[in-house]
Every structure is written in structure tokens, then in C-alpha cells.
Length: 283
Ligand SMILES: [Zn+2]
Ligand SMILES: [Zn+2]
Image (cartoon, rainbow, N blue to C red; front, side, top):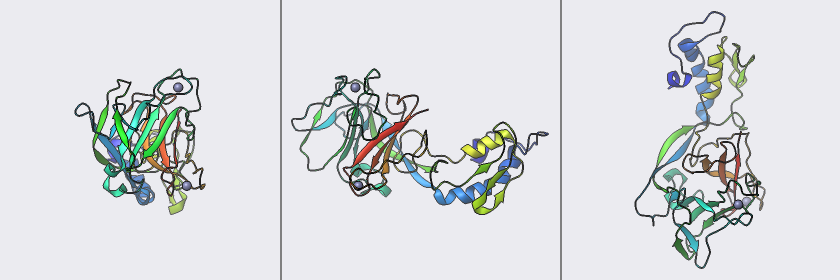
């Protein structure tokens, strides 16, 4: 895995450019594994298919949606556009290790997909003008409604496990220090284990910094992929740090781009399952 991620093979030492290739990989791998392995989480990436029975509940990127009896399809109050259905997920169909974590019911995120919408506060986790985010309780009286949009619906058929590591911005992330300018060779040091690596080439420095990362794209569980830095919202009811339920990327499962290739996160209070937020950040 390291050979592929580091992107270079062979043990040559470019003169004056620091330790490079396999020699550098072999030199730093044990130290990086030592500090990252204890932080490893499992992320679950949704496996989807298109087509088939539109009445299936768990889906992404459009399709019919469950609405409360008598409820109209949600529309944006600022531009009158009918919301797009980004996520509809039966919480009893989440991966087995996460069963019960987010509560029973059906999680839904509807969103104003109009790029010309005058509301530009939708990045904010608790701006609920441009989105509807909720969990329909199992006892709710619901009916399946046709979607006014015609996006290609992606139906959930399973989950794929991936190893996931914290971004450098997380409080729990290991303190990895790489000396020197980004385009110059330098040393790698990890103070928590008293480690210092030999001089590394600029290419290897870059790879050291990007080898252990959170998984991007859509996922449940694991570490959030932050674009701007760790931004965990706090529950408006109790002030607790909210936890990630589901990550949504730009133009992967969903035909929508959050700002400039932003990544968003559905967050939830660990105690108040109906206390939800969805915020995103971009480059
Ligand atoms: Zn709008
Ligand atoms: Zn709370």
C-alpha cells in the first residue's frame, strides 16, 4: 500500500534532494504506523445502483421521498425551487457496527439545488431555510411522493468498509512535523514517540503528509474529511459536540457542488437524535 501511495519506487537517493523512493518509505513507515494505527476507524462507503424499484426507501440524489401525510414537497422560501432529495436513509439499514447509533427512523436531507438561490448561508450547519434535515420517526404516518426533479437516483444496496484516519486538523491527530519549505528536503519528526527521520526529499515530504487521511466522498462513520479544518457544530439544545452521521461530497453521489468542490457533513447530537445540522466547507 505504501509503495502505491508514496507514488515512487526504487531506492535511489537523488543527490542533494534528500532520502527518496523506497528507502524513505522504509524509513518512515514504522513511525507513521505507530501513531496512526491506534486512531484508525472504519468508514462505510455506500454501494449504490441505479434503476430498479423506485419505491425503495434508502437512496441518494433524487427519487421519490417519504413525506408526512398531507405535507407538500419542500420548496426553498428564498427562490421557490422545489428542494432536491440528497439523502434518504433508513437508519436500521446502516452498517452493523453503527446500528442504533443514530436512532430509529428515516434520515432525510432535502436541499435547494439552485445555484442562483439568493440564500448563500447554506454552508452554515443550522441554516434551515435552504435545506430540510430531519429523521422521520418509525411511527410517523408517511406517504411516498414523486420527486419534481429528474436526477439519476442511486439506491443503497450495501456498504464497503474502508480504513479511515484523522485529518491533521483534528485534536486527536498525531503531531507530525516536517521541517523546511514545501519544495525543499527536510526532516520528519513525531515528538510523541521521540522519532526523527533522515532528510527526506520534497516529494516524499508531501507523501508523508498525505498518506493517512480521512476517506473523501460519501461515507458513514470514520473521521470527517474537513476541507477547511475541524468544524464540529455543537448541539443547540445541550451544547455537546455533535458527531458525524454522513459525509456528502461534491458531485460524487450527488449531482451538486457545494461552493468550490466543498464537502459537507450531516451531524447529530449523541443524546438528542433529532438535533441535526448539515454544514459544508470548500476551498
Ligand atoms: Zn433556494
Ligand atoms: Zn444535545
